[in-house]
Amino acid sequence: MNSEKSQSLLNNNLLFVLFLAAVISFFNYGVLKDFKQLPSPLYGGDLWSHMGSIYHIYYGGSILDSSQLIGEIPWVPWFYYIPILAISAITGLDPMLSLFWLNIPLIFIGSILAYLLIKNYTNDILLILAAVLVLLYNYPVFKYTDFAFYIMMPALLVSWLYYLKNKTLQNKLILIAIIALSNLTNTQLFFSQYILFGLIVINDLYKLYIKEKTAFEFGKLIELLRPYLEIFVISFIISLVYWYWPLFVYKGSTPNDLQIYGWADYSQFNVQTTYIIDVFKAWYPINSSIHTTAFTLLKILGIFLIIKLRNKDRFHNFAFMILLTAFIGLTHHLVTFNLFHIHFAPERLYGMVQTSLIMLQIVIAANWLKERKFVSPVASSIGVLTFLIIVLVFSDIFGTIEKNSYYQNAKSDIPGTFIELKNWVLKNTDVYDVFITTNEDAFALNSFTGRKVVSYRRTHTSTYADLNARMLDQAAILYGNNDELRKTLLKKYKVKYLYWSVSWLSNEFRFNEEGAITGIFDPLMVPSKPEYKKFLDENGIEYIETVYYLDPAWQPNYPTYNVLVVVPKEKRFDHPWSYDLDNYIYEVKKFEEEEQPYWIVYGVKNG
Image (spheres, rainbow, N blue to C red):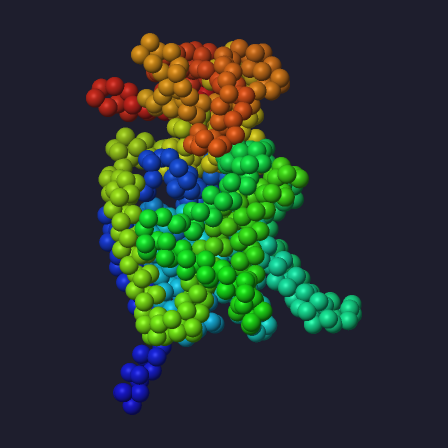
Protein backbone atom coordinates (compact mmCIF):
# COMPACT_ATOMS: atom_id res chain seq x y z
CA MET A 1 0.00 0.00 0.00
CA ASN A 2 2.81 2.41 0.90
CA SER A 3 4.48 1.63 -2.41
CA GLU A 4 1.23 2.42 -4.26
CA LYS A 5 0.87 5.73 -2.38
CA SER A 6 4.45 6.67 -3.18
CA GLN A 7 3.90 5.87 -6.85
CA SER A 8 0.69 7.93 -6.82
CA LEU A 9 2.55 10.90 -5.40
CA LEU A 10 5.26 10.60 -8.03
CA ASN A 11 2.59 10.55 -10.74
CA ASN A 12 0.98 13.72 -9.37
CA ASN A 13 2.33 16.39 -11.69
CA LEU A 14 0.97 19.18 -9.50
CA LEU A 15 3.37 18.19 -6.71
CA PHE A 16 6.33 18.71 -9.03
CA VAL A 17 4.89 22.06 -10.10
CA LEU A 18 4.51 23.17 -6.48
CA PHE A 19 8.05 22.01 -5.74
CA LEU A 20 9.32 24.20 -8.59
CA ALA A 21 7.26 27.10 -7.18
CA ALA A 22 8.87 26.51 -3.78
CA VAL A 23 12.34 26.67 -5.35
CA ILE A 24 11.53 29.93 -7.15
CA SER A 25 10.01 31.29 -3.92
CA PHE A 26 13.22 30.48 -2.07
CA PHE A 27 15.28 32.49 -4.55
CA ASN A 28 12.78 35.35 -4.42
CA TYR A 29 12.95 35.34 -0.64
CA GLY A 30 16.70 35.77 -0.93
CA VAL A 31 16.12 38.93 -2.95
CA LEU A 32 13.19 40.39 -1.00
CA LYS A 33 14.45 39.87 2.55
CA ASP A 34 16.96 42.72 2.20
CA PHE A 35 14.53 45.22 0.64
CA LYS A 36 13.86 48.36 2.65
CA GLN A 37 12.25 50.37 -0.12
CA LEU A 38 10.87 49.89 -3.62
CA PRO A 39 13.31 48.96 -6.42
CA SER A 40 12.73 52.27 -8.16
CA PRO A 41 14.12 55.79 -8.26
CA LEU A 42 13.39 57.26 -4.82
CA TYR A 43 9.88 58.68 -5.04
CA GLY A 44 9.87 58.50 -8.82
CA GLY A 45 8.33 56.18 -11.38
CA ASP A 46 5.30 53.91 -11.49
CA LEU A 47 6.06 51.88 -8.38
CA TRP A 48 6.02 54.83 -6.00
CA SER A 49 2.97 56.31 -7.71
CA HIS A 50 1.04 53.11 -7.10
CA MET A 51 2.38 53.00 -3.56
CA GLY A 52 0.59 56.30 -3.03
CA SER A 53 -2.62 54.67 -4.27
CA ILE A 54 -2.16 51.84 -1.77
CA TYR A 55 -1.47 54.25 1.10
CA HIS A 56 -4.54 56.28 0.11
CA ILE A 57 -6.74 53.23 0.79
CA TYR A 58 -4.66 52.04 3.75
CA TYR A 59 -5.06 55.36 5.56
CA GLY A 60 -8.83 55.51 4.99
CA GLY A 61 -9.38 56.77 1.44
CA SER A 62 -12.15 55.36 -0.75
CA ILE A 63 -11.39 53.00 -3.65
CA LEU A 64 -13.74 55.20 -5.69
CA ASP A 65 -11.56 58.31 -5.25
CA SER A 66 -8.29 59.37 -6.82
CA SER A 67 -5.39 58.82 -4.47
CA GLN A 68 -3.87 62.14 -5.57
CA LEU A 69 -6.53 64.66 -6.56
CA ILE A 70 -9.74 65.46 -4.69
CA GLY A 71 -12.81 65.28 -6.91
CA GLU A 72 -11.24 62.92 -9.44
CA ILE A 73 -11.55 59.18 -10.05
CA PRO A 74 -8.67 56.71 -9.62
CA TRP A 75 -5.94 56.56 -12.23
CA VAL A 76 -6.14 52.78 -12.55
CA PRO A 77 -8.37 49.94 -11.25
CA TRP A 78 -7.56 48.80 -7.75
CA PHE A 79 -7.99 45.02 -7.42
CA TYR A 80 -4.21 44.40 -7.07
CA TYR A 81 -4.18 46.59 -3.98
CA ILE A 82 -6.72 44.40 -2.14
CA PRO A 83 -4.45 41.39 -1.39
CA ILE A 84 -1.64 43.77 -0.38
CA LEU A 85 -3.91 45.54 2.10
CA ALA A 86 -5.28 42.20 3.31
CA ILE A 87 -1.74 41.06 4.19
CA SER A 88 -1.19 44.33 6.07
CA ALA A 89 -4.47 43.92 7.95
CA ILE A 90 -3.60 40.36 8.98
CA THR A 91 0.09 40.83 9.79
CA GLY A 92 0.32 44.50 10.75
CA LEU A 93 3.07 45.01 8.16
CA ASP A 94 3.46 48.31 6.34
CA PRO A 95 1.82 47.98 2.88
CA MET A 96 5.22 48.37 1.20
CA LEU A 97 6.46 45.23 2.93
CA SER A 98 3.17 43.48 2.17
CA LEU A 99 3.69 44.32 -1.50
CA PHE A 100 7.08 42.60 -1.36
CA TRP A 101 5.83 39.46 0.39
CA LEU A 102 2.75 39.10 -1.79
CA ASN A 103 5.19 37.69 -4.36
CA ILE A 104 5.48 34.40 -2.47
CA PRO A 105 1.80 33.36 -2.65
CA LEU A 106 1.58 34.78 -6.19
CA ILE A 107 4.39 32.46 -7.31
CA PHE A 108 2.39 29.45 -6.14
CA ILE A 109 -0.85 30.77 -7.64
CA GLY A 110 0.89 31.49 -10.95
CA SER A 111 2.43 28.02 -11.06
CA ILE A 112 -0.97 26.38 -10.49
CA LEU A 113 -2.55 28.52 -13.24
CA ALA A 114 0.22 27.56 -15.68
CA TYR A 115 -0.24 23.91 -14.74
CA LEU A 116 -4.01 24.06 -15.26
CA LEU A 117 -3.49 25.64 -18.68
CA ILE A 118 -0.82 23.27 -20.01
CA LYS A 119 -2.23 20.01 -18.62
CA ASN A 120 -5.05 20.39 -21.13
CA TYR A 121 -2.43 19.83 -23.81
CA THR A 122 0.10 17.39 -22.35
CA ASN A 123 0.82 15.31 -19.26
CA ASP A 124 4.56 15.43 -19.91
CA ILE A 125 5.74 16.76 -16.56
CA LEU A 126 8.97 18.16 -17.99
CA LEU A 127 7.09 20.21 -20.58
CA ILE A 128 4.66 21.36 -17.90
CA LEU A 129 7.56 22.44 -15.68
CA ALA A 130 9.15 24.24 -18.62
CA ALA A 131 5.95 26.23 -19.17
CA VAL A 132 5.64 27.04 -15.47
CA LEU A 133 9.24 28.23 -15.41
CA VAL A 134 8.60 30.53 -18.38
CA LEU A 135 5.96 32.29 -16.26
CA LEU A 136 7.72 32.24 -12.89
CA TYR A 137 11.11 33.54 -13.98
CA ASN A 138 9.57 37.03 -14.14
CA TYR A 139 9.26 37.24 -10.36
CA PRO A 140 9.51 39.24 -8.17
CA VAL A 141 6.90 41.73 -9.39
CA PHE A 142 5.79 44.98 -7.75
CA LYS A 143 3.15 46.54 -9.98
CA TYR A 144 -0.49 46.06 -10.89
CA THR A 145 0.50 45.72 -14.56
CA ASP A 146 2.80 42.80 -13.71
CA PHE A 147 -0.02 41.27 -11.64
CA ALA A 148 -2.18 41.47 -14.76
CA PHE A 149 0.56 39.88 -16.90
CA TYR A 150 1.44 36.97 -14.63
CA ILE A 151 -1.73 36.23 -12.66
CA MET A 152 -4.92 37.65 -14.15
CA MET A 153 -4.25 36.86 -17.82
CA PRO A 154 -3.29 33.22 -17.09
CA ALA A 155 -6.38 32.99 -14.85
CA LEU A 156 -8.50 34.40 -17.68
CA LEU A 157 -7.14 31.91 -20.21
CA VAL A 158 -7.61 28.97 -17.84
CA SER A 159 -11.19 29.97 -17.02
CA TRP A 160 -12.05 30.40 -20.73
CA LEU A 161 -10.46 27.10 -21.69
CA TYR A 162 -12.33 25.17 -19.01
CA TYR A 163 -15.61 26.85 -19.86
CA LEU A 164 -15.25 26.11 -23.58
CA LYS A 165 -14.36 22.53 -22.70
CA ASN A 166 -17.33 22.02 -20.37
CA LYS A 167 -20.04 24.70 -20.26
CA THR A 168 -21.29 23.98 -16.75
CA LEU A 169 -22.81 26.57 -14.44
CA GLN A 170 -19.78 26.33 -12.16
CA ASN A 171 -17.34 27.04 -14.99
CA LYS A 172 -19.54 29.90 -16.18
CA LEU A 173 -19.59 31.53 -12.75
CA ILE A 174 -15.82 31.17 -12.41
CA LEU A 175 -15.35 32.75 -15.83
CA ILE A 176 -17.67 35.64 -14.95
CA ALA A 177 -15.75 36.30 -11.74
CA ILE A 178 -12.34 36.20 -13.45
CA ILE A 179 -13.46 38.53 -16.26
CA ALA A 180 -14.83 41.01 -13.72
CA LEU A 181 -11.66 40.91 -11.61
CA SER A 182 -9.54 41.29 -14.74
CA ASN A 183 -11.47 44.43 -15.61
CA LEU A 184 -10.80 45.72 -12.09
CA THR A 185 -7.06 45.04 -12.37
CA ASN A 186 -5.73 46.90 -15.40
CA THR A 187 -7.11 49.16 -18.13
CA GLN A 188 -5.19 47.43 -20.93
CA LEU A 189 -6.36 44.03 -19.66
CA PHE A 190 -9.92 45.35 -19.93
CA PHE A 191 -9.43 45.82 -23.68
CA SER A 192 -7.31 42.70 -24.23
CA GLN A 193 -9.81 40.40 -22.62
CA TYR A 194 -12.71 41.84 -24.64
CA ILE A 195 -10.74 41.32 -27.84
CA LEU A 196 -10.35 37.66 -26.84
CA PHE A 197 -14.03 37.51 -25.84
CA GLY A 198 -15.08 38.82 -29.25
CA LEU A 199 -12.83 36.39 -31.11
CA ILE A 200 -14.27 33.44 -29.16
CA VAL A 201 -17.82 34.43 -30.13
CA ILE A 202 -16.81 35.02 -33.76
CA ASN A 203 -15.04 31.67 -33.80
CA ASP A 204 -18.22 29.87 -32.69
CA LEU A 205 -20.26 31.70 -35.33
CA TYR A 206 -17.66 30.78 -37.95
CA LYS A 207 -17.72 27.10 -37.00
CA LEU A 208 -21.52 26.99 -37.01
CA TYR A 209 -22.38 28.91 -40.16
CA ILE A 210 -19.31 28.74 -42.39
CA LYS A 211 -17.22 25.74 -41.48
CA GLU A 212 -20.15 23.42 -40.77
CA LYS A 213 -22.38 25.26 -43.31
CA THR A 214 -25.40 25.18 -41.01
CA ALA A 215 -28.54 26.84 -42.34
CA PHE A 216 -29.27 30.08 -40.54
CA GLU A 217 -31.96 29.83 -37.88
CA PHE A 218 -32.65 32.69 -35.51
CA GLY A 219 -33.37 30.28 -32.67
CA LYS A 220 -30.00 28.58 -33.06
CA LEU A 221 -28.26 31.95 -33.14
CA ILE A 222 -29.92 33.00 -29.88
CA GLU A 223 -29.07 29.63 -28.34
CA LEU A 224 -25.41 30.11 -29.26
CA LEU A 225 -25.19 33.73 -28.11
CA ARG A 226 -27.28 33.56 -24.91
CA PRO A 227 -24.55 32.16 -22.60
CA TYR A 228 -21.98 34.62 -23.96
CA LEU A 229 -24.40 37.50 -23.46
CA GLU A 230 -25.02 36.38 -19.87
CA ILE A 231 -21.27 36.19 -19.20
CA PHE A 232 -20.72 39.62 -20.73
CA VAL A 233 -23.60 41.40 -18.98
CA ILE A 234 -23.00 40.03 -15.48
CA SER A 235 -19.20 40.50 -15.57
CA PHE A 236 -19.59 43.97 -17.07
CA ILE A 237 -22.06 45.06 -14.38
CA ILE A 238 -19.62 43.96 -11.67
CA SER A 239 -16.83 45.83 -13.49
CA LEU A 240 -18.81 49.07 -13.24
CA VAL A 241 -17.53 49.45 -9.68
CA TYR A 242 -14.61 51.10 -11.50
CA TRP A 243 -15.69 51.49 -15.12
CA TYR A 244 -19.01 53.29 -14.57
CA TRP A 245 -17.29 56.69 -14.31
CA PRO A 246 -14.89 56.38 -17.29
CA LEU A 247 -17.60 54.98 -19.56
CA PHE A 248 -20.81 56.73 -18.51
CA VAL A 249 -19.76 59.91 -16.69
CA TYR A 250 -16.69 60.92 -18.68
CA LYS A 251 -17.87 58.92 -21.73
CA GLY A 252 -14.31 58.03 -22.65
CA SER A 253 -13.19 61.67 -22.74
CA THR A 254 -9.60 61.99 -21.49
CA PRO A 255 -8.55 65.61 -20.86
CA ASN A 256 -5.21 64.29 -19.59
CA ASP A 257 -4.16 62.49 -22.77
CA LEU A 258 -1.20 60.66 -21.25
CA GLN A 259 -1.85 57.75 -23.63
CA ILE A 260 -0.95 60.17 -26.43
CA TYR A 261 1.86 62.38 -25.15
CA GLY A 262 3.37 59.70 -22.91
CA TRP A 263 3.90 57.20 -25.74
CA ALA A 264 5.52 57.06 -29.15
CA ASP A 265 4.37 59.75 -31.58
CA TYR A 266 1.77 57.87 -33.61
CA SER A 267 0.93 60.98 -35.60
CA GLN A 268 3.86 59.85 -37.76
CA PHE A 269 2.82 56.79 -39.77
CA ASN A 270 6.37 55.46 -39.97
CA VAL A 271 6.44 55.40 -36.16
CA GLN A 272 3.17 53.44 -36.13
CA THR A 273 4.70 50.72 -38.30
CA THR A 274 8.25 50.63 -36.95
CA TYR A 275 6.88 50.45 -33.42
CA ILE A 276 5.24 47.12 -34.26
CA ILE A 277 8.57 45.81 -35.53
CA ASP A 278 10.45 47.11 -32.50
CA VAL A 279 8.04 45.45 -30.06
CA PHE A 280 8.26 42.17 -31.96
CA LYS A 281 12.07 42.34 -31.93
CA ALA A 282 12.03 42.90 -28.17
CA TRP A 283 9.98 39.74 -27.64
CA TYR A 284 11.86 37.70 -30.27
CA PRO A 285 15.49 38.79 -30.08
CA ILE A 286 18.08 37.41 -32.48
CA ASN A 287 21.61 38.22 -31.29
CA SER A 288 25.06 36.82 -30.67
CA SER A 289 23.81 34.85 -27.66
CA ILE A 290 23.24 31.26 -28.77
CA HIS A 291 20.72 30.40 -26.07
CA THR A 292 18.70 33.60 -26.60
CA THR A 293 18.52 33.01 -30.35
CA ALA A 294 17.64 29.33 -29.86
CA PHE A 295 14.83 30.27 -27.48
CA THR A 296 13.53 32.80 -30.03
CA LEU A 297 13.54 30.17 -32.77
CA LEU A 298 11.60 27.80 -30.49
CA LYS A 299 8.98 30.51 -29.90
CA ILE A 300 8.73 31.28 -33.64
CA LEU A 301 8.25 27.58 -34.37
CA GLY A 302 5.46 27.67 -31.79
CA ILE A 303 3.73 30.51 -33.67
CA PHE A 304 3.99 28.58 -36.94
CA LEU A 305 2.51 25.44 -35.38
CA ILE A 306 -0.32 27.31 -33.64
CA ILE A 307 -1.36 28.73 -37.01
CA LYS A 308 -0.89 25.46 -38.88
CA LEU A 309 -2.67 23.29 -36.31
CA ARG A 310 -5.42 25.78 -35.42
CA ASN A 311 -8.21 23.40 -36.45
CA LYS A 312 -6.68 20.25 -34.95
CA ASP A 313 -8.56 20.34 -31.64
CA ARG A 314 -10.04 22.68 -29.04
CA PHE A 315 -6.68 23.49 -27.42
CA HIS A 316 -4.95 24.45 -30.68
CA ASN A 317 -8.00 26.43 -31.75
CA PHE A 318 -7.97 28.31 -28.45
CA ALA A 319 -4.22 28.94 -28.76
CA PHE A 320 -4.86 30.43 -32.21
CA MET A 321 -7.43 32.84 -30.79
CA ILE A 322 -4.93 33.91 -28.14
CA LEU A 323 -2.37 34.52 -30.90
CA LEU A 324 -4.90 36.62 -32.82
CA THR A 325 -5.67 38.60 -29.68
CA ALA A 326 -1.98 39.42 -29.26
CA PHE A 327 -1.70 40.45 -32.93
CA ILE A 328 -4.77 42.71 -32.78
CA GLY A 329 -3.50 44.28 -29.55
CA LEU A 330 -0.14 45.08 -31.16
CA THR A 331 -1.59 46.52 -34.38
CA HIS A 332 -4.91 48.07 -33.31
CA HIS A 333 -3.50 51.60 -33.39
CA LEU A 334 -3.21 51.40 -37.18
CA VAL A 335 -7.00 51.63 -37.19
CA THR A 336 -7.97 53.39 -33.97
CA PHE A 337 -5.37 56.14 -34.07
CA ASN A 338 -5.76 56.96 -37.74
CA LEU A 339 -9.56 57.02 -37.52
CA PHE A 340 -10.19 58.31 -33.98
CA HIS A 341 -6.81 59.60 -32.73
CA ILE A 342 -6.81 57.13 -29.82
CA HIS A 343 -4.93 53.97 -28.93
CA PHE A 344 -4.74 51.68 -25.91
CA ALA A 345 -0.97 51.15 -25.60
CA PRO A 346 -0.21 48.51 -28.27
CA GLU A 347 2.83 46.99 -26.56
CA ARG A 348 0.84 46.65 -23.31
CA LEU A 349 -2.10 44.93 -24.98
CA TYR A 350 0.37 42.66 -26.75
CA GLY A 351 2.44 41.98 -23.64
CA MET A 352 -0.64 41.13 -21.58
CA VAL A 353 -1.32 38.21 -23.91
CA GLN A 354 2.17 37.31 -25.08
CA THR A 355 3.43 36.57 -21.57
CA SER A 356 1.02 33.62 -21.33
CA LEU A 357 1.20 32.77 -25.03
CA ILE A 358 4.92 32.00 -24.72
CA MET A 359 4.05 29.03 -22.51
CA LEU A 360 1.89 27.58 -25.28
CA GLN A 361 4.45 28.34 -27.97
CA ILE A 362 7.36 26.54 -26.31
CA VAL A 363 5.29 23.54 -25.19
CA ILE A 364 3.64 23.05 -28.60
CA ALA A 365 6.98 23.51 -30.38
CA ALA A 366 8.85 21.13 -28.04
CA ASN A 367 6.12 18.53 -28.28
CA TRP A 368 6.19 18.74 -32.08
CA LEU A 369 9.96 18.18 -32.08
CA LYS A 370 9.50 15.23 -29.73
CA GLU A 371 6.84 13.67 -31.95
CA ARG A 372 9.06 14.05 -35.00
CA LYS A 373 11.76 12.12 -33.10
CA PHE A 374 14.59 14.49 -34.00
CA VAL A 375 15.81 13.23 -30.65
CA SER A 376 14.30 10.70 -28.28
CA PRO A 377 11.10 11.89 -26.52
CA VAL A 378 12.73 11.78 -23.09
CA ALA A 379 15.86 13.55 -24.26
CA SER A 380 13.75 16.19 -26.00
CA SER A 381 11.74 17.02 -22.87
CA ILE A 382 14.77 16.97 -20.59
CA GLY A 383 16.66 19.10 -23.08
CA VAL A 384 13.92 21.73 -23.24
CA LEU A 385 13.63 21.94 -19.47
CA THR A 386 17.39 22.06 -18.91
CA PHE A 387 17.76 24.69 -21.62
CA LEU A 388 15.07 26.86 -20.04
CA ILE A 389 16.55 26.52 -16.57
CA ILE A 390 19.93 27.68 -17.86
CA VAL A 391 18.54 30.52 -19.96
CA LEU A 392 15.71 31.81 -17.82
CA VAL A 393 16.93 31.25 -14.30
CA PHE A 394 20.67 31.64 -14.21
CA SER A 395 21.23 34.10 -17.04
CA ASP A 396 18.12 36.23 -16.55
CA ILE A 397 16.99 36.13 -12.93
CA PHE A 398 20.32 36.19 -11.14
CA GLY A 399 22.21 38.15 -13.76
CA THR A 400 19.56 40.84 -14.08
CA ILE A 401 18.99 41.23 -10.36
CA GLU A 402 22.68 41.46 -9.54
CA LYS A 403 23.18 44.19 -12.14
CA ASN A 404 19.97 46.09 -11.46
CA SER A 405 20.90 49.30 -9.66
CA TYR A 406 17.32 49.79 -8.44
CA TYR A 407 17.39 46.37 -6.76
CA GLN A 408 20.63 47.30 -5.07
CA ASN A 409 19.25 50.68 -3.96
CA ALA A 410 16.18 48.94 -2.54
CA LYS A 411 18.46 47.46 0.14
CA SER A 412 19.24 50.95 1.45
CA ASP A 413 17.29 52.72 4.16
CA ILE A 414 14.86 55.43 3.10
CA PRO A 415 16.54 58.79 3.83
CA GLY A 416 15.72 60.17 7.26
CA THR A 417 14.38 63.42 5.80
CA PHE A 418 11.58 61.53 4.10
CA ILE A 419 10.86 59.44 7.19
CA GLU A 420 10.64 62.59 9.31
CA LEU A 421 8.23 64.21 6.86
CA LYS A 422 6.13 61.06 6.52
CA ASN A 423 5.79 60.63 10.27
CA TRP A 424 4.77 64.24 10.79
CA VAL A 425 2.25 64.24 7.94
CA LEU A 426 0.64 60.98 9.05
CA LYS A 427 0.36 62.17 12.65
CA ASN A 428 -0.96 65.66 11.95
CA THR A 429 -3.05 65.47 8.78
CA ASP A 430 -5.95 63.52 7.27
CA VAL A 431 -5.77 61.40 4.11
CA TYR A 432 -8.02 63.90 2.30
CA ASP A 433 -6.08 67.00 3.36
CA VAL A 434 -4.77 68.90 0.33
CA PHE A 435 -1.21 70.21 -0.09
CA ILE A 436 0.04 72.65 -2.70
CA THR A 437 3.63 72.19 -3.90
CA THR A 438 5.59 71.39 -7.07
CA ASN A 439 4.59 68.44 -9.26
CA GLU A 440 7.63 66.43 -8.18
CA ASP A 441 7.26 67.20 -4.48
CA ALA A 442 3.56 66.37 -4.80
CA PHE A 443 4.53 63.03 -6.31
CA ALA A 444 6.93 62.27 -3.46
CA LEU A 445 4.55 63.42 -0.72
CA ASN A 446 1.64 61.41 -2.08
CA SER A 447 3.73 58.29 -2.69
CA PHE A 448 4.44 57.67 1.00
CA THR A 449 1.39 59.26 2.65
CA GLY A 450 -1.50 59.09 0.18
CA ARG A 451 -2.21 62.78 0.89
CA LYS A 452 -3.88 64.89 -1.79
CA VAL A 453 -2.39 67.67 -3.90
CA VAL A 454 -3.53 70.37 -6.32
CA SER A 455 -1.29 69.42 -9.26
CA TYR A 456 0.72 66.31 -10.01
CA ARG A 457 2.83 64.56 -12.65
CA ARG A 458 0.72 64.32 -15.78
CA THR A 459 1.67 60.76 -16.67
CA HIS A 460 0.98 59.32 -13.22
CA THR A 461 -2.54 60.49 -12.57
CA SER A 462 -6.02 60.05 -13.96
CA THR A 463 -6.54 60.50 -17.69
CA TYR A 464 -9.93 61.99 -16.77
CA ALA A 465 -8.51 64.89 -14.72
CA ASP A 466 -7.96 68.26 -16.42
CA LEU A 467 -4.29 68.75 -15.50
CA ASN A 468 -4.05 71.86 -17.68
CA ALA A 469 -6.71 73.61 -15.58
CA ARG A 470 -5.11 72.42 -12.35
CA MET A 471 -1.64 73.63 -13.34
CA LEU A 472 -2.96 77.03 -14.39
CA ASP A 473 -4.90 77.35 -11.14
CA GLN A 474 -1.87 76.32 -9.09
CA ALA A 475 0.19 78.94 -10.93
CA ALA A 476 -2.41 81.57 -10.06
CA ILE A 477 -2.30 80.59 -6.38
CA LEU A 478 1.48 80.51 -6.11
CA TYR A 479 2.71 83.09 -8.58
CA GLY A 480 -0.20 85.31 -9.64
CA ASN A 481 -1.17 88.84 -8.62
CA ASN A 482 -4.96 88.33 -8.58
CA ASP A 483 -5.73 88.07 -4.88
CA GLU A 484 -9.47 87.47 -5.28
CA LEU A 485 -8.79 84.58 -7.65
CA ARG A 486 -6.20 83.21 -5.23
CA LYS A 487 -8.73 83.13 -2.38
CA THR A 488 -11.34 81.49 -4.63
CA LEU A 489 -8.94 78.79 -5.81
CA LEU A 490 -7.66 78.01 -2.32
CA LYS A 491 -11.25 77.29 -1.31
CA LYS A 492 -12.06 75.45 -4.55
CA TYR A 493 -9.25 72.96 -4.05
CA LYS A 494 -9.66 72.88 -0.25
CA VAL A 495 -5.97 73.63 0.21
CA LYS A 496 -4.89 73.18 3.85
CA TYR A 497 -1.10 73.16 3.54
CA LEU A 498 1.75 74.47 1.44
CA TYR A 499 4.75 72.15 1.34
CA TRP A 500 8.15 73.63 0.51
CA SER A 501 11.25 71.50 0.02
CA VAL A 502 14.83 72.49 -0.66
CA SER A 503 14.37 70.97 -4.14
CA TRP A 504 11.43 73.19 -5.14
CA LEU A 505 13.23 75.03 -7.94
CA SER A 506 15.58 72.21 -8.97
CA ASN A 507 12.58 69.89 -9.36
CA GLU A 508 11.34 72.14 -12.12
CA PHE A 509 14.35 73.80 -13.73
CA ARG A 510 18.02 73.33 -14.50
CA PHE A 511 20.22 76.38 -13.89
CA ASN A 512 23.72 77.39 -14.95
CA GLU A 513 26.27 79.03 -12.64
CA GLU A 514 24.84 82.46 -13.42
CA GLY A 515 21.36 81.34 -12.34
CA ALA A 516 19.86 81.33 -15.83
CA ILE A 517 17.42 78.58 -16.75
CA THR A 518 19.11 76.04 -19.04
CA GLY A 519 16.57 73.21 -18.94
CA ILE A 520 13.27 72.05 -17.51
CA PHE A 521 12.04 68.82 -15.96
CA ASP A 522 8.49 68.92 -14.59
CA PRO A 523 7.34 72.51 -14.07
CA LEU A 524 3.80 73.82 -14.26
CA MET A 525 3.37 73.61 -18.03
CA VAL A 526 0.43 73.68 -20.45
CA PRO A 527 0.04 73.52 -24.24
CA SER A 528 0.31 76.89 -25.92
CA LYS A 529 -3.28 78.00 -26.50
CA PRO A 530 -4.68 81.57 -26.75
CA GLU A 531 -7.02 81.06 -23.78
CA TYR A 532 -4.15 79.78 -21.60
CA LYS A 533 -1.93 82.72 -22.58
CA LYS A 534 -4.77 85.10 -21.76
CA PHE A 535 -5.22 83.53 -18.31
CA LEU A 536 -1.51 83.80 -17.51
CA ASP A 537 -1.24 87.36 -18.78
CA GLU A 538 -4.35 88.60 -16.99
CA ASN A 539 -3.18 87.18 -13.68
CA GLY A 540 0.40 88.45 -13.83
CA ILE A 541 1.98 85.00 -14.11
CA GLU A 542 5.41 84.91 -15.71
CA TYR A 543 6.00 82.23 -18.35
CA ILE A 544 8.22 81.24 -21.22
CA GLU A 545 7.13 79.65 -24.49
CA THR A 546 9.09 76.76 -25.93
CA VAL A 547 8.80 73.37 -27.63
CA TYR A 548 9.02 70.43 -25.27
CA TYR A 549 7.61 67.08 -24.13
CA LEU A 550 4.63 66.93 -21.78
CA ASP A 551 5.91 63.72 -20.22
CA PRO A 552 8.78 64.50 -17.80
CA ALA A 553 10.16 60.99 -18.41
CA TRP A 554 10.10 61.50 -22.17
CA GLN A 555 11.87 59.42 -24.76
CA PRO A 556 13.08 60.78 -28.12
CA ASN A 557 10.20 59.24 -30.09
CA TYR A 558 7.56 60.92 -27.90
CA PRO A 559 5.60 63.85 -29.40
CA THR A 560 6.64 67.43 -28.62
CA TYR A 561 4.35 70.44 -28.26
CA ASN A 562 4.43 74.20 -28.17
CA VAL A 563 4.14 74.78 -24.43
CA LEU A 564 3.85 77.60 -21.91
CA VAL A 565 6.17 77.02 -18.96
CA VAL A 566 5.29 78.86 -15.75
CA VAL A 567 8.24 80.57 -14.08
CA PRO A 568 8.19 81.18 -10.29
CA LYS A 569 7.38 84.73 -9.21
CA GLU A 570 10.46 84.99 -7.02
CA LYS A 571 13.74 83.35 -8.02
CA ARG A 572 14.68 82.55 -4.42
CA PHE A 573 15.05 78.85 -3.64
CA ASP A 574 13.59 79.37 -0.13
CA HIS A 575 10.65 81.56 -1.23
CA PRO A 576 9.69 80.94 -4.88
CA TRP A 577 6.04 81.97 -4.54
CA SER A 578 4.58 85.48 -4.65
CA TYR A 579 4.93 87.45 -1.43
CA ASP A 580 1.19 88.13 -1.70
CA LEU A 581 0.60 84.48 -0.80
CA ASP A 582 2.30 85.05 2.56
CA ASN A 583 -0.91 86.71 3.74
CA TYR A 584 -2.62 83.32 3.60
CA ILE A 585 -0.01 80.99 5.09
CA TYR A 586 1.82 80.47 8.37
CA GLU A 587 4.67 78.17 9.30
CA VAL A 588 3.59 74.93 11.01
CA LYS A 589 6.60 72.64 10.93
CA LYS A 590 10.21 73.04 9.83
CA PHE A 591 12.83 70.33 9.41
CA GLU A 592 16.47 71.35 9.21
CA GLU A 593 19.54 69.45 8.14
CA GLU A 594 22.95 70.83 9.12
CA GLU A 595 21.17 73.95 10.39
CA GLN A 596 19.63 74.62 6.98
CA PRO A 597 15.91 74.26 6.23
CA TYR A 598 15.21 71.07 4.28
CA TRP A 599 11.43 71.11 4.22
CA ILE A 600 8.75 73.35 5.69
CA VAL A 601 5.01 72.80 6.01
CA TYR A 602 2.87 75.95 6.06
CA GLY A 603 -0.77 75.99 7.12
CA VAL A 604 -3.29 77.83 4.96
CA LYS A 605 -5.45 80.30 6.88
CA ASN A 606 -9.09 79.26 6.86
CA GLY A 607 -7.89 76.21 4.91
